Amino acid sequence: MPEADVSKKEKNFHTDVPQKNELFFLKGSNNYDWGMKNRLARIFSPASGRTVMLAFDHGYFQGPTTGLERVDLSILPLAPYADALMLTRGILRSIIPPSTPRAVVMRASGGPSILKELSNEQIAVDMEDAVRMNVSAVAVQVFIGGEHETQSVHNLTRLVDAGMRVGIPVLGVTAVGKDMVRDAKYIRLAVRICAELGAAFVKTYYVEQDFDSVTSSCPVPIVIAGGKKLPELDALTMAYNALSAGASGVDMGRNIFQSDAPVAMLQAVRNVVHEGMKPREAFELYSKFKNSVKK
Ligand code: R5P
Image (cartoon, rainbow, N blue to C red; front, side):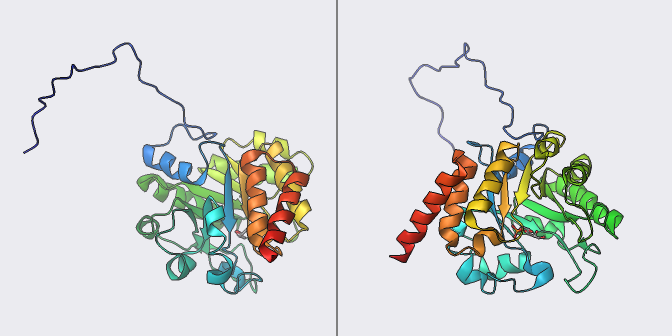
């Protein structure tokens, strides 16, 4: 039996204080249910509105990518510095400790390897299993202009329907085919299609020209992929420029785990994303961290 409320203290209903009714901090996300918002708030920092996602899902189509030969050795030491881990369910269950406080964004499409036509993907994770793994979002590749464009868009919409039932957001990942021009016109098209069809956030590549037109015409947050390994200062500059042009974070892989000093690089990226640190200053921080690890 619960105890009766016998306190002698006078009740205070604060009748003069209206209850706060705050808008959700993330672009385009105000009309989701509580669970969906809570998951998005695990990926994106409510303080900065931004995220540093660490991408190491590359093995789902290209096997043991350079730097990911041993995910246990290369990635686990990085996890404390990321807001979210983007990975496959195979790696989650085999390598990632369930005690991790990091948000998980799970690759949920796949099929072809680098030896075949990459756009021929299907859904690769059932939403019931995504719930079982307590993921914060699922990610699906969308190949606009690719050979299997419609199939990949259908993968997205099926995952959005399944995710809406259980409160799991979908990350639409725009893939740029080998023969396609990677410019703002193409990226605008690809990210807008993902958002229109229900992606809660979209991952794409940064382009130097007119990236602000990509972010402003996309009604949901955009995170940028890192792409091929660049010199550290260039990668930090790319992240800074993308954020200045309206991106909400990075989902970076090779530019972190293929760096000479991955932990130092990830910390420098964090400072650019969450603190607005300028690229040159972030590079100095990277060099300092790198040297302190060597000593
Ligand atoms: C590739 O399709 C994967 O989704 C990667 O997560 C993505 O390319 C980001 O990694 P990176 O920064 O190495 O491009």
